[in-house]
Image 1 (cartoon, rainbow, N blue to C red):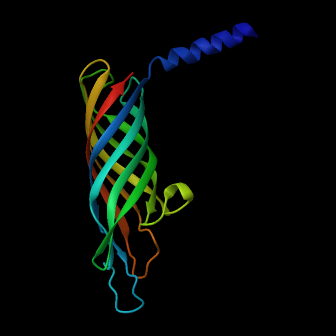
Image 2: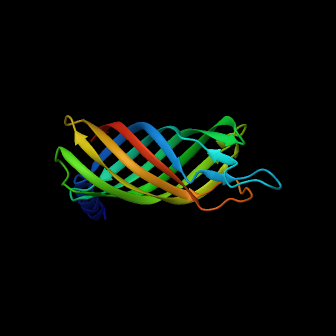
Amino acid sequence: MKKLAMVLFLACAGSAWGQFFEVWFNGGQSLLSNKGLGTVLTSGGTKDDVQLEDGFRFSFRMDLNTESRFGHEVQYAYSRTKLNILGTEQGMAIHQGGYNFLVYATHEGTRFRPFATGGVMFANYVPPGSSATSGGGDNKFGVNYGGGLKVRVTSLFGLRLDVRQATTPKPFNLELRQGWLRQTEVSGGFGVLF
């Protein structure tokens, strides 16, 4: 039994050596489109009475790549935006998490690795005066897709550029709400490659 366990361990450990782990920190801009959330007025309002504004964002990403052209990514992102209600703006947060599948144009180990990505995500839209840690906010599930470029600077460090779009249903269930909210990320990052 011990021999069988040792053989299984070595077989699993051998396959794990063919994978490469990366940890990334990105910062950049969050550009929102179709950002009218509806109205707070009981009559005479428009779908753009309440809107979200563009803002900054940062994210943490962990990637597990195989020796081939495929990878997996788990991410958390924080976006700071403003909620504009009939011309009055207040600060607001968007927390996002998700999983993405990566397809690379080049094999693992090359210096430049362009990639395409797509995946599933959730977004927690936290209005002014609420806190995500105490259950505040409106959770929406959606998809994201995009691409980018990873550059290996040294054997341990890398840089990356990302352009992605996240699409979720609009939060807060206001009157005259229609369509999905689109959030475009333009960011650059620094990573540690194992």
